[in-house]
Length: 242
Image 1 (spheres, rainbow, N blue to C red):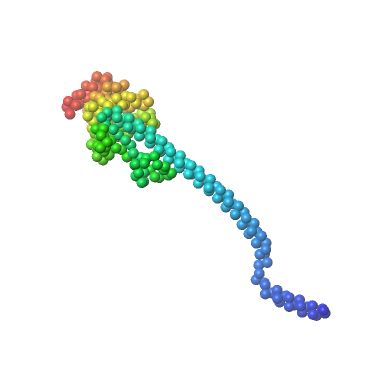
Image 2 (cartoon, rainbow, N blue to C red):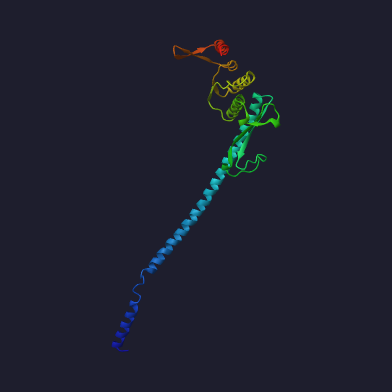
């Protein structure tokens, strides 16, 4: 082939190559780079999937521990409530109910996997000991509600005692028999906690260790440490003039 023919072939080849000017000449390098990034991302995703699975397992384990802790604590408080209420009301009976979303009270031992299933605590009591006369809080009188509330506080205190309790006239709506029962219960629990109470009734004074009298003189309140006899005279005098 002559030189002239070679130049013509070269010219044809160049014209043919011009058709491919729009082709990305860095495509191969970019493909290799993107392929490498793809592999890294796939590997990272696998690591994240493993981490997500472990986190899910941990959350499930913590949730089950939470459920077990709630059920364990409730069983303790419920047991204490039944015993405490029996001491406060010897002829009565009381029970705590752990409420759930499905309200299946007939099967309290069923397996619960999520703490969100718990909705609250129900209280059912009878002041006569008859199961047929079991009532809920909204069916009780003021004095009965006070007694149930105190039984619940004392039940929790047995599980997790606070250092001290401040009770303001908790015996106001109670009759003499129940006031004495409450006073005896406070005395029993006073070994593990300090109870500060205000009262206008004599029953809470019987087992107290320290007495303070509060009087209103010349438009000013005065508080003084008094003897047990002075405290009794004060409440008896107040009841006489009431």
